[in-house]
Image (tube, rainbow over all chains, first blue to last red; front, side, top):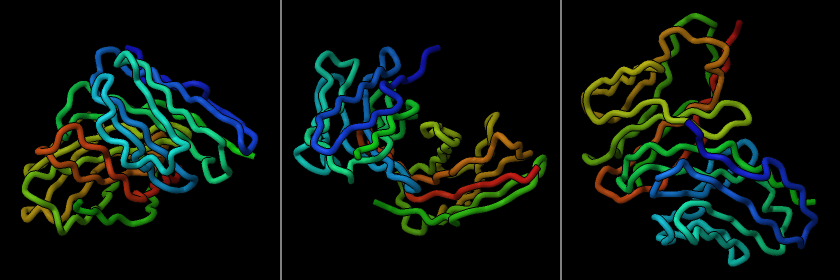
Length: 115
Length: 112
């Protein structure tokens, strides 16, 4: 079946531009996560949705980062006024339910390069 | 959150078994041990998880020490496609939809 998809796969932005990254989770998955992965490091948590509710945004690095999931399915991560330090791979993951050990299914990521 | 310690890198030969160690000395009673791996240019994927008993699935085996302070992921017959970064992660069964806290993982290289 279809897995988690993300678009675009690659994005180049000039410093100061706004970008929007899209995540299509597996159909029916309640939980959705965003992670940021810098080069050579493990992914780091950004934010979590349970259906349309954003229950944890403790990992968002600044108020330039904003995420939404208005209908409880597709999610968008928006970064305003991009900076060079925002260059990273942004990963989206979804899981079927809401327990602490549910398997998370990851998309291929969006590689953002800020010039 | 309880943390895990893994070697930065390991190397193995194709078609030989690989044992990837993980230390988690501060593990709590409600922590499950999970392993994910990340192939080049892909998102992480689930490999296996366990609580106390050893576990087997089609991808790998997980051996858990009796005191649960360490575990080993076993790939029985490594192929070139197993070259990836392997992450050992603790996840609390008592929390709701917990985020995954990745460390740096072990980068596994396979020699043909």
